[in-house]
Image (tube, rainbow, N blue to C red):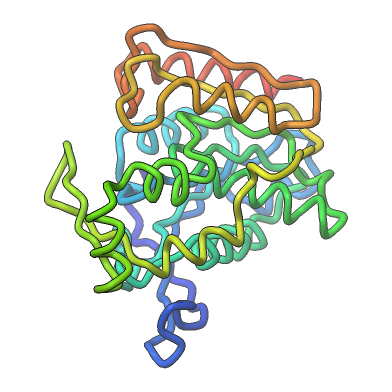
Length: 270
């Protein structure tokens, strides 16, 4: 990964706290993105998962992989994650989608492959829906979704809470859920309610580009059946799912990283 200090982008305050300070979003953009504005080679945009950031193993591997091929590579920390400002309890899908759109607009590339991990997979799909709706679908060269947690605020958070936990969230505005990776993390009432504005489960989505899904079958956070449900929501035909029998949620082992690189190489060359 580049040793340069990240750049920062300022956006408005979080939707949940309009009187709060502006969001300060940390991002990195390697490979002279503007250099390929007239090139056929796509740039790559990375979208991290919930409570993850751009300093992870997969991101570092992709930074090296793109640098070795001269491909632009952009990544950033969602607000309240990593080096960006904010409080996770104030975050929302709408804010994080807005941030992804803002970073994409700074990539001066003719076409972009968007790679989304976990929640980032959902944001990638919402980003594709936004671009298609704006008549900019041709910008997308492909989506690569790693354990995509589409509609996670509803199906992977709200629906999995016990009735007492749901009531606590509604009464107090936040519930601290236990984590297998770190300390308990906040799920806010605003995150759940605002997330319902972005659910994909009610209709079909045609991103207008190839979609590649990498999914571990030993994933405790995003079950592999969730990825299969996503395939039923995608209206385009060029959709492939790669099930990794012994794969976990993170898919950060060396062999998982090589699989990701092969998947990306196929899209770059197509």
